[in-house]
Image (cartoon, rainbow, N blue to C red; front, side, top):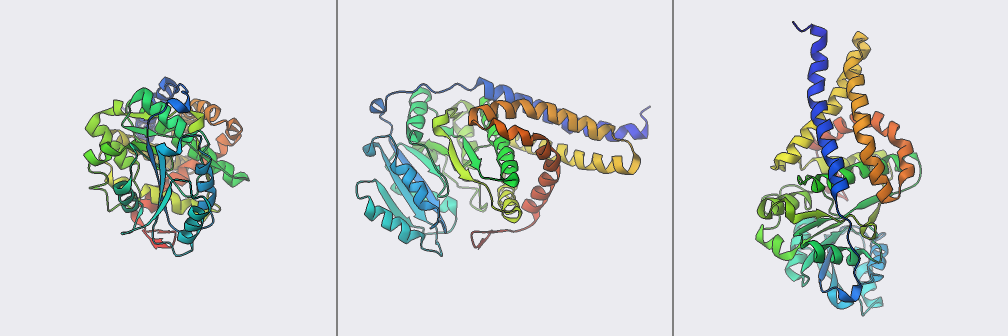
Length: 377
């Protein structure tokens, strides 16, 4: 008969075992992803509409547009559409000035009709002439080969939806902790796609066929969630066309760089906003992944508390060591791809802080409202 002190360990083992199996599958999924063969830009025939939904981005949008201006891709094959989402600063004027300064650059600006990123993207797609829609954020920077990488990937795979890599950058301890944590999310999303169970992607570097967007009715059904312009759409495309229609662009040319959050308050506000869309998940893979991640980290916190009270640490160390061993390989290969292997120096501190962060952001995202760029969400 099972002793009472063995029950906590058994209960802790179940989600931890599930977590280990899922991350292992993601790791093998990442390894199975094929790299893209580089073609000559002159051979490309794919047309793009790059869409940026901007709100109060007067200080950052110029750098983003400068990077797009440097694209080594034929101007006749791409356009940039920026939608000003009711900015309260001079974002609209900054973009207008940029258009005047670069008359040959295929850039246009729209004033948002409704509020929110999904609405802005949907509005831009009405005017988009490109075969593929590519979204990024106003505070991001892309490489000169960004569109070339997407063109090569699409022309070789004909994927209906392509998720791209995103890397955070900053300076200082807090920034590096954010970078590593974010890299784990990108790696998990990429690995899940490689494993045939796409669960995550990031709208800062996201591409899909305009026709696929139309066929799945875009963001219909998810309008009430402030975020999810990426994940919900990927799941709809996957459900409509199959998981083989989704791919991850495993190409360094496609890496989009964004900045870390400047302080702890901004960090938690951003992560809670991401978590707030969780009730809208309908895909079994992401629901199972989200539950296993939450319960594993909750098990660590409870195991720590149980150990402090009872002096019995078996369940805590079982989960903690298992998690260290399964998380590290995925981060190693992701760090190598992102050329950020030095971030692995912060692996142990992140693992120690992660359980508390997961609980705070999950509870906060589900049960509280936050303000984002001056707008309550």
